[in-house]
Length: 508
Image: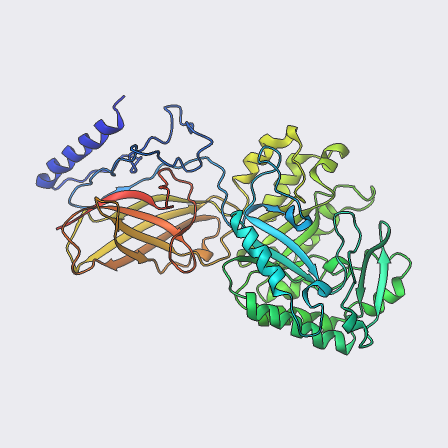
């Protein structure tokens, strides 16, 4: 078997021969020049996602022939810890540290819930500092933030409601409050969502937070979580107070008003609504949905469960069933995963349902994954959310300064959902000194890359003063501001700065 170095030399020599004969060659399937698989096709370094080459191991891509080249990167089988997908971090919402990665998968999304009294303790004075602190902490952990604003009380890890249920200043305006329970006194409740003062000030709250956080790249998504028990748009906590709960729950007209406010003040932020609410209406406006009791196959009794009697009925509605194409589908564990294990639930069935419903993020409440289930969970993490593979890229071998460069690529999303943030496709040329010599951003709308294959045709202009020489052609999915790579691809050769070298371009 030839070495990588022999492969490069042989390809280079063949390219010189083809220049005179007009034939074409196909670049070997490892354009980065760094080993990415053993002879049996397995990843030799599973602890190095993307097979980032070590110092001194990165060879330049082989040089294709003069008539044009199609490169085929090597696909990898690693778990990709990309933004907006995978397990959520719910730990430091309770002041705890993330669990070790051999107990709970690494997370890229931090999930928080805040009650109104925490966010606006005094009328018109918003606690942005608290939210900013969480955003900063999440960023240090490599996470973006997802959160829910709750009009009433949210239950903490002990199923109790800390502090006031709603701001005292709002109650002083005559807004009633129902204190309800499901597990124990004080674990639920919400204010009168139909009271004019509630509606007036709640719109002001959503507007204020939209003005500050809408379109922020640090925000992954936001729950439309205003109404009902725990912001889940239900009255499940209303044991003994059903009549009051019914009167305080928003009317249909007020439900649509609340949802409209979220779309008005967070116009470009992914939004999801719990299944208990008017999901069809929210999905019709471009929202996604979430289930707050994923994995329930009989946790509350044998006659009814969420997995068979609630979620399938929701997705049977066409607008809800297709909501994942434009906005996320999120789930939160019912109990914890150990509860499933202890109850003898079928983990394969549960995980498969997550794929069928196009899940992107799973909140397991930062509790351990049962040891026996790790093999299934690892395979599942390679499928939920998005997973982009560059199948091939075609371009001319040579270009001239000031000329046009045609870039035709074929991509495949092997996940079950698209990306919901506009992370653009970028190209760059890197010179022999390792510096960026030129760069471009594709016009492709990557948020439209649903599961399946996608063809991208771009034509870019070579800078007029680009020096003659040999350049490495690289690709990446970039941050919103196009400043740097943001998303890992399921191909080998990732460089430490996140770019993927895929071919060589000659400028003459």
